[in-house]
Every structure is written in C-alpha cells, then in structure tokens.
Amino acid sequence: MSGEKIYLYPVYIRLWHLMNAILCLILIITGISMQFSNPKYPLIRFDLAVSVHNIVGILMAVSYLLFIIGNIFTGNGRYYRIPRKGFVKELMMQFSYYTRGIFLKEKAPFQINKERKFNPLQLFTYVWTMYFFVPVIIISGISMMYPDIFIPSKFLGISALHLTDLIHVVAGFAISLFMFIHVYFCTIGITPLSTFKSMINGFHETHD
Ligand code: HEM
Image 1: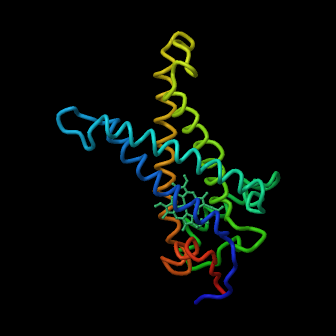
Image 2 (image 1 turned 90 degrees about the horizontal axis):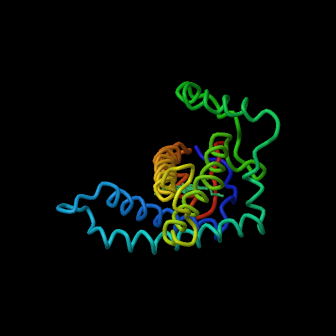
Image 3 (image 1 turned 180 degrees about the horizontal axis):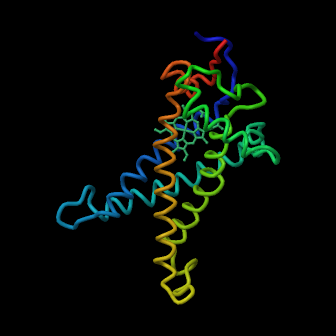
C-alpha cells in the first residue's frame, strides 16, 4: 500500500545517475575484457577495449565533476553527511532490519523523508563509493593515461605503474560489487520496482 509521495531526486541527479550507470556498465565490461584478455579469443578486441575504456572513463570523470558541483551548489549534498554521533548504532539497526526485521514484516527503523533521504547503510555505501572509490578510480585511471607526467618509475622499490594499476583494479572491483548490491537493495521498496520509478519521476513513495 503506498502513502505519501516525496520529491527527492532532482532532475540533475536523475540525468547524472542514468549517464553514470550506463558509463559504469561500459567501463566494467571493457575493463573485464582487458583484464582477462586472451589475444586469441578476446571478449572485445584489445585495442578497441582500451580506446572505448579511455573515452568512457573521461566522460565518467566529467559526469562525476557535475555530480560534485551539483551536490555543492544544491541542497543534495547535505544528504551525504555522516552524523558525528550514534552512526555505528544506526548502521547496526539498519543491518538488523535487513537481516531479520524485514522478514518479520517489522517497520523500517528509519523513515525516508525530506530530512533523511538515505537509510544509514545507503548513506555509508554512497559516501564510500562517491567520495572515495570513484575519485580513486578516476585519479588512478587518468594517471595511467599519462604515466610520463603522473607516475614515477618506482615507488618504495616497486613499479609505480603496477601499483597504480592494482589500485585502479581494486577500486573497480569495489565499485562493481557496490553496483551489484545497490541494484539488489533498490528492489526493496514498497514494490520491487518503486525505487527504480523514483529515479525516473523523482518521487519517493512511502508506506502509509
Ligand atoms: C544499472 C545500474 C544502476 C541502477 C539500476 C541504479 C538504481 C538506483 C536507484 C533506483 C536509486 C534511487 C534509490 C536510492 O536513493 O537509493 C539510485 C540512487 C543512487 N545511485 Fe544508483 N543505480 C545504478 C548504478 C549506480 C552506480 C554505478 C553508482 C555509482 C558509482 C550509483 C550511485 C547512486 C547514488 C550515489 C545514488 C543516490 C543519488 C542521490 O539521490 O543523491 N548507482 N540508484
């Protein structure tokens, strides 16, 4: 049963998110193809995968910049602030709801409204992804596009290029894992599709 509809997703967030999701999917597919490439049977021809990955990576960096500018200059940035007190307890409450309460048809511990757009677990994963892993993947990716400018030959006695590559791959793995879990959790709305609809029309539907 649906209750109120709250406008939570401004147009710029919806456009950024759609573009970001498509670009991330292309980056994951071309990234995996390069990582496990076998010259005889490539998923995507290696040189083609590199070119597409580089161009789409730059587009993703530009779209990330728009997300950050939007979050700074609109009210949306305030939803990404982790409370200084009691956040671990809030995380545990949300975790307990997802692993137990939800199956007992209990009420969610945190109601989504204009003041709180994300539940604590969403907040935690969105902040880590958008303010740590995405910047790390962009900086390491751009560095590897211009290694002569950004990457020294050695760092603590090991190849700095290999180290940057390792950081890039680990961040890519973390973002892919996030995306998988994120999409699954988006199905836990008042209906399995209601959260996806929110990202199309901007309105979050609440239980009454
Ligand atoms: C096919 C891929 C994806 C789908 C179907 C999807 C779906 C959704 C949906 C339905 C929402 C609204 C619910 C909510 O606020 O939690 C959302 C929000 C969000 N998603 Fe995704 N997502 C995808 C990929 C991604 C990726 C790759 C990222 C980041 C790298 C991402 C980051 C976010 C963020 C930060 C929000 C909150 C935006 C805001 O309101 O400020 N999503 N996503």
